Image 1: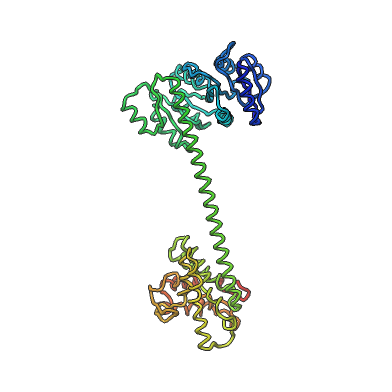
Image 2 (image 1 turned 30 degrees about the vertical axis):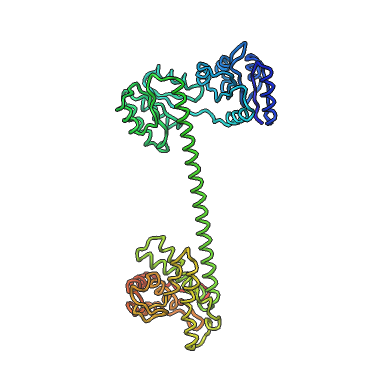
Length: 466
Ligand SMILES: [Fe+2]
């Protein structure tokens, strides 16, 4: 639990604050003077200091001033407790890097809220100040140094090098510098890898409208006119950094969500593919003569599509569609599918019906409407003499024309229970003969090329399902 030190010279206040925070299970210690406070901080580390401003011996501001000068304890997160809203105190408190003010008497919920927020406050951000005037750099360091880590650079090239070494949270940039001026430096910063959105604030003595427009057009997030009012400058930088953190966390959130979405899309795609493979496996298992047929037809179809110039996404889709081209056989009695002898007309009609059945099965998958095309029309012929619809030429969807060639090629080039695979030259002749009658001539031509390249007749299916 966080350790909190409360410092107040009013015993009643000290007691009430202690009670409220102890109730919230914080590890609370108390001190009633600035001197005790510093001594306690030196003895052991605390996570937060709640410091009363109006104390008798040493004011809270003076106490914090001393603390900030002692390296061992200077980083302590501090929140002031105050009954007044004295402007000078406020400005000193800001200068000294106080995180918040709690008005006394505070409601318990306000006190708890402020404490929680202060405990969660981020580590100090890093500001890079760029100015060719050493005096200006010193002043900037002094002003921002308590609340932020400040690094300095006295020229544009030094600034770019410094950013390369460690990316700051914000850059304070002088407009007029010898060599590279501020605008050039800004351009170079935003061209650096990962620095496209690095907030850059200009410090400039020219506060005319033209300069202002030029600065914003160049991509600066803000500008502060010199000489500046300390509290205003600090407050502006605080808000800009707050904005940057909000943008960063929004960006992180978007990236996280996108990643999760991609992952879940990938899972869905994987699942769809697995379902498709399982279904294709079920078809092939039923038809014992043509083991591995669906997979081979899918592979040939994909290669035909690729050679016909289809993009990869389309060839993958064709693979899946081809894999399921015979899915309708699931609905045909097994005795008919595996009948060794000649089929009766009735049996032949039942077999032909696998195209319609396949279409009916796959058209229920509304998320993949093209899936049923192959099953429906892979037995159509280019001359219109096929089935089930007798459509011809370009009326047959191209996917079905591709699968038709791949299907017939595999039927001839694989072993069946009643015969061995046909010799390659016979298969080639059959494809050649079917050009323009059974097959789309363009697709058949590509199939012929594939056959001619396949010197060892590797594109074939053997009985063991290869
Ligand atoms: Fe078929």
